[in-house]
Length: 238
Image (cartoon, rainbow, N blue to C red):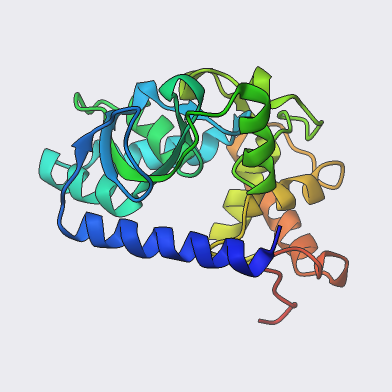
């Protein structure tokens, strides 16, 4: 695969999808939607492309969502813009925004509508070819909540069935604390940091003070030269 050609294709899709969304032309999700189409869907129908998430991040985003009125919530979710790939059987696979939309589902908001765009429609592929292509494009993260390799065909069917990865939650908190920079366009950045923190940081997950201590320890680790190869690394003192 020519990486420059693939990158050009992705950028073209993003330009097209932005143009569609600028017109606010969100269509109810259908299996035949073309790449670039803007869609709306009940978030409970979306299928994840990763096994796990950090429930602390979900809780924080749930509080943000609960505080919004209906109009503000719709604006917020449209800005978040959840990308999907349509797979075999017309299944919508969410490639980003798992924490936000899990938070929407868990929130007190009665309307669970998500908004986004179609990255690609590969519904004509069989399951094997589909997951191979998803892996080639870095649209799936086939590791469980302990960082162990897992088969994509075993992914949970809904966002509500995703596993809790405490180190993924730690990575999010470290990024919020300024331990590393968010890198837009970098696939599964926080999971790379979560894997780095596994075995290096420990805490009682049920104790908020312990978690805060762990965040401080992890920020120091994130700034160390040992982490320099990770996406978004910041040298100490920056």
